[in-house]
Length: 323
Length: 226
Image (tube, each protein chain N blue to C red):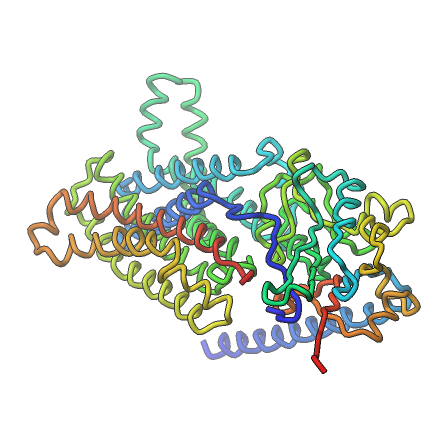
């Protein structure tokens, strides 16, 4: 800050990007995360059939990204003009790059739904809309031929979508909490964690997957390293703030003592990290293998990631360089 | 196997040399036109706010609203009273407005190119293309952009690019200032008053650490105390 002359009056007065953006950041991260883990597990276990986990993950990925689009367009002050973003590209803008990635990612996630529910759709079509059956069969024949390619593209774009949501806000130089290099990595990690929790929840609830099935056990195993990475990245952001400039030091109040620190400690750390750890490790094997622990800890993980995004968006925009 | 590896290394080295040459020639291409640019002298408009002369009358604010049709309870330009409460006799005012950055973050992040540099290098808005995503507002390190309540588009001071300046006048605030606290002109023109002024006066840029290279300069009151 220039001590000789400065101003503190500003024109935006508060948080410009509110909860719809935070919810969108969760939904996009969850969508990408779900597809990444489910495709990797399929590949790793060399599965051929559509497992309940794959069904759940692909459905979750498609539904969440579409809901995310609703949030994103709804947050515009001129939502009916959203198509302008599709014809006027600015490749310097992370938002434009993200929109381009979404234009490829959304159809890919829809193709994943087609793969997962091929048999069900075929059954439905042969019962009701018989005229569409021939078309669907031909389309699936082509799609099944290029399945490895679609899988690879899907993983790549899922990672891009997860990471771009982080880059989107890490370029905002005015906000010390947001303008850090590790934020995109944090968003990929927390997106993975929400994707894992969300798809295992959906697999158990809607597709009758056993809680102790092979797939869910694998998911359960990768859940903890991902969480460890998340905690580490949050720690990095905190350390970079407390050793930084005056504005960065002031922004570290986001974690300790500021208006949003309660949300962080109770919501992100308490619900998101501690509750699943306590239920799964500290209360003994009996509790850890119960249904209750499974549902509560998965749900808590998703809520934790949502609260993390809300915390980042709101606390991030609260502490700026105007001190 | 050995042959393949050798060929691979060969291609790799040829490739990297190629990339190196390409990037070096790119660098040359980038540096050369900038020397020519100074010759054909495209204007680079800038402004000086002199804190020694500003008395806080807010004539500039009113003129800006009138000329640019800014909605009633919004403003592109604000004069903030930064007088130290301990020293009430030493009045200090400061102009709050778009800093007209050369590397403008708002232009960089705008997904629809609605926020752009016009032919004079002034950062301005094409309100029809703005979808009001507010990315430019959060990206601006000076927080001087806002959504116009009437047009629902983002905007900020553009040196009256589409009003006074287009008609050959100076920006409204500069015309309205009775105390010559504001100086407007072409920084690329060595003979302009603003360039001469900057040659002899010490001036500051707001928040140079943000790397945006603002075109708005501030001359602060500096009392050394004899």
